[in-house]
Length: 162
Image (cartoon, rainbow, N blue to C red):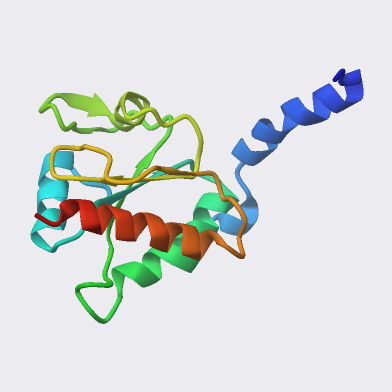
């Protein structure tokens, strides 16, 4: 299959368009950013939950929609069994935190070490930073995202059980 020059330019423009801050999301919501990933994972595990790590990008409208529609309501769930323990790191962010190996790294470097290349990406991690379910990469189909997230959360919760 051969792409025309116009099609190729349109295809290449998609990532750039997604990275441009959207003025409509100037008042972006945020999840907490931990100072230490091991401490955050330990707290999540103590609550019987995986550490849900959102890899985000400032100005990303898909990241914002994911936070507003799925993650923030999960932080406020009525029951401990349904409540999420979610944190956020940002791609290209130089702010430092403690990684799972005890070293201080930038948010961007931590995400690269975890294999994150796109925003939004949701990782479900155990107490040592191990993946407990397959990551959710991208926004997928909005109508089905909740079911994909629930499926991964159930897998991760099962993996935490002794």
